[in-house]
Length: 123
Image (cartoon, rainbow, N blue to C red; front, side):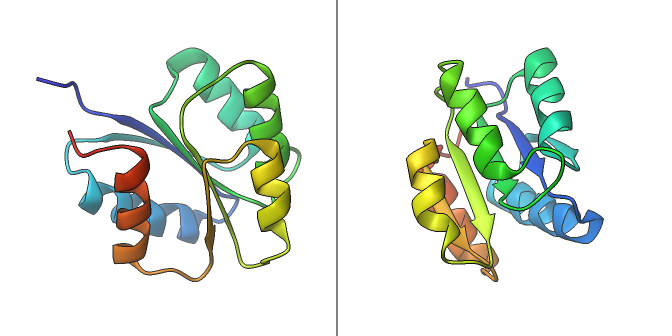
């Protein structure tokens, strides 16, 4: 049996982090979810505990989602990374940085689950 996935959620808004967490928990009921507020905390979390999937907001300080993706890909990290943003202009930057997917905000739970299941099959 496959162990539960570890999914890392990064967003500087508590409300959005918790909302995405609930959506992800619905899509992957056995997943272990870590939530952090910025890219720096995400790097620390990933270094200590890795992840099977990363979901990050595009705009945060001190390290935004695109910079985080660039940093992880430069370390040869191969896990799927999903960048979220309400700004469609971020998509080409996200793709260039190595994001596996870009999802435009706002999005539904169903559309998020569909995208995530393409990147990380249900265990």
